[in-house]
Image (cartoon, rainbow, N blue to C red; front, side, top):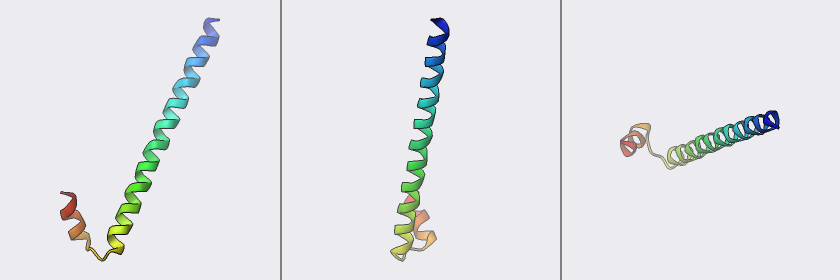
Length: 53
């Protein structure tokens, strides 16, 4: 029974890690989309950096 509990805990930890990684990748994608929109709007890299600071 203890072995099954340990395996379940391992599986839950792996699932949580996978979900965290997926959320991080989604944030990266959103940031890239925002940057692409800013560049497409005609802003220069310097203007974009100024807005971020």
